[in-house]
Image 1 (cartoon, rainbow, N blue to C red):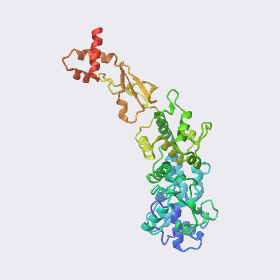
Image 2 (image 1 turned 45 degrees about the vertical axis):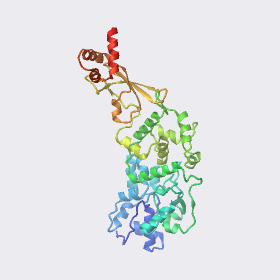
Image 3 (image 1 turned 90 degrees about the horizontal axis):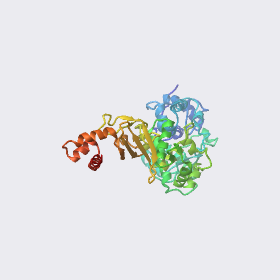
Image 4 (image 1 turned 90 degrees about the vertical axis):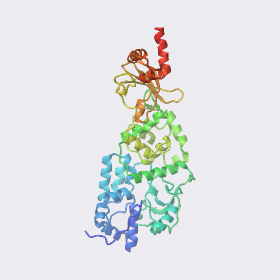
Length: 433
């Protein structure tokens, strides 16, 4: 195996295809097949735009630069965009596929060929990025974040992306390397068929897509992601507490009202109440299949969440299908020996008639009964009381002991874990007895 005499410096967020195109131009090769032979020692290798193959072979040929296959995949292909929403074993399989000789299988493993969210037909670019790149690096190049499905605006500048004449679906282009500078010499047109330049939802999609590319987030598992979504829907009143079923008749109209219909149609993301097999149904039911990251971003936008806020909750173990977390729950009877110990196994959940939020009522064997509104958002929420509904016999025995002392009213209340007025009320009860 021979080493390459030179290899272009890989620029930030540059699509690996773009690096190959700049190598082809700088090498002086007249034929793209000769460039393929230089890079991969195989002139019949297809120049896949999204997931090029044989990266192990390529990195061994690059002299003087410490590029690894993992670095190239994480920083210069689209794989990190998909990684958080596919099983870990599939991620490993994809990594080995791209490192090896069968890049065409990557799209099959990801399920992109069967997805209703289709890749862009043409490579796109941001005119402001072109100017910035020329000033910083001397030339423009293809950015990978611009090529992601659903990204219509540049996340850095907020301007509409422009469509080039370079198509990955063109049989001729499959064996050609075309730089952005060369593509700029041809005609171009807007990639978005409707006027959504100022649409905040398009900006949200672009920024969240960039986060997925740059953060290199691991897959937490489809089950945990599903639990996160259901817990958020529960807090907003879209899940029936009695049956734990999603209220589709309420959720779908609200979702469609959140986004412009034209945007959902363009993303092939329109959902209806009558269609129980939509992508939204698949995403929120038991996770049997994977869904495109764009679908997750749209749902997060509707919930008022972000990629980062979701992973923060999942990483800290805050996600639970139950609004008050899994039992048992702590007893908050301050005078009991088991104070703050998780000994309560009975929690009845109802819904607040005013706010629609879940209300949990916790009953301990010591007779102490308390309730609070949910859902719990922090770990310390488990130790909060919204309302005390009953003190129980253990508390009352302690009350009689304290009532016979000369302590101040405030001190007695502090010992009993209640307010002074409650102490006075119980004095009256004792007098009546």
